[in-house]
Length: 478
Image (cartoon, rainbow, N blue to C red; front, side, top):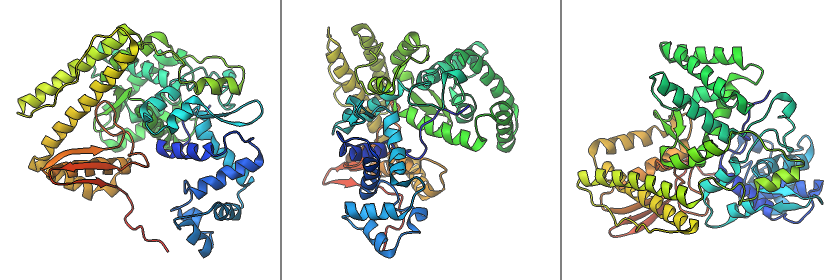
């Protein structure tokens, strides 16, 4: 048996987009050994791997290192560097591996003539105004096992699951069990996710898995101290899930899956980021999915059939995209907005003009209104954030967090951008601080800001500026 997970070699969705941009240059060509190698050369030319990696760089000559760090690395220089690595299987094998992340997510496929095709979903991802959350939602919504492009997850081994939908069902079931047993409803911990979610292979086991998770939680929470809890979790995994992989890999895969699932905006983190739960602000959408999809896999005859389905942005028809459900989404949004406005009023903080709500008899207008209201809600969050940063204790907390950024175990780049944005708010003549990282409905960043945009845009009373954030502490090279 295997965990279901994404490739851990490409963890950043913005990097996946840049892989796709490089692959776009080959669209229409046949996917031969030559074009496979060419793809790998293009990736290095665009500095999408290798650079900054000591293991990669240690075998390069001084001249090759100079090329690598020059502003204009040429295609021929990149080819020279890749070929000098003498990869087992050759550069073409590396090119095939590099294609996997964008192919598995439905951004590209190979047609009957083995020609390279960018799907409608892939082209939407390449658009200047792409919505990262929507792109990944539409891909992950349809990700399933078995499928014709994943030989390691066959039906004969019991696989029958859509991981994203199954995760929604399992968290909902766990919360329901907690409610019935008078336990706190708090979603699931990352430890529980590692044990019970990425090892779930069939949708018919969702209820029994929820029961097992609750029993595990009771024993786990009865342990005293972190060391004892961690030892119990590892032992439980080795006794019940040892056929999958190691405990260390289980944690790594779980963290990677949660990172991608958060992009869909259907989940939010709680308990200082240790628990993942269903996003209450997307209640209508989540309940609609749970009512209409039991997380069972569909049947596809060929790889192309599956790839075309993954890449079709019109499929499946979303169960809440009708006038009644969209109006329900608006009602939930307005309740949330009213609560946020009242909290600001109670703190004597003025609020901007709320977007006008209009009655509409078509889904297009309602979806536009929903987007407008969500943007307004984010603005309210930003106003509250600005007010909070003016308090002395929060200034001290911001300084302390920035000073300790390098000791964080994970999410350092994302947390750095968040903390720098807070720090820029502290300058009390700020009119507006606009970080460009994507956020969930809780206004917490899900990833770093995309390429070709400033990390943070700053608007003050007497000047404007942009801010670029980096984890690099010494960028001098050669």
